[in-house]
Image (cartoon, rainbow, N blue to C red; front, top):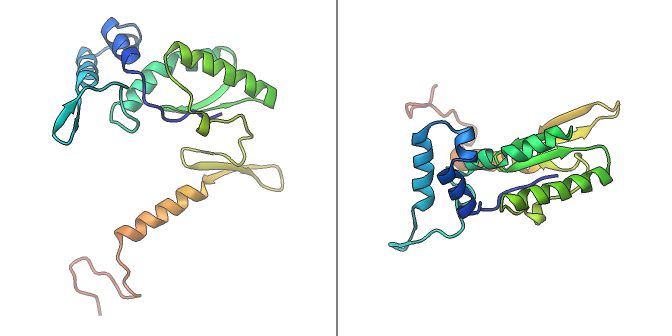
Length: 185
């Protein structure tokens, strides 16, 4: 199963920071708590006008991974208490189970846990599916003929990497690219 990027509910995060329940349990530095509170209370500038933030920290924002770790820690603990194997980075999560039926039960559990935290599972990016054929954090798993499991970059991540290299390097036409601008003879 995967759960990826929905903006986090501002009131839930703000309440955790202000009341100290979850945030102070995981983050003992008062300066970090003040910084989180200030960031969440700050507006968003759009066309030179400051607009009040309604939905919380945006997907991909600098605070998103920290807040995901603080809020989703209790979900991790619940899954571990039930004996599930999980892999999570910020708000991207895979839970590994042995059957489709077990996967559906875990998905229902995750929905209940996320509802308590006022978070939503992104249904379009989430699935109960085999680990093979899915990607997680740019990696994919597959079986080779002798039932050995392999991992590697997913094709999409590899294509993206190649495209970025092409964008940042010039085509030299087979000529040496010297650092100081002069080609070696």
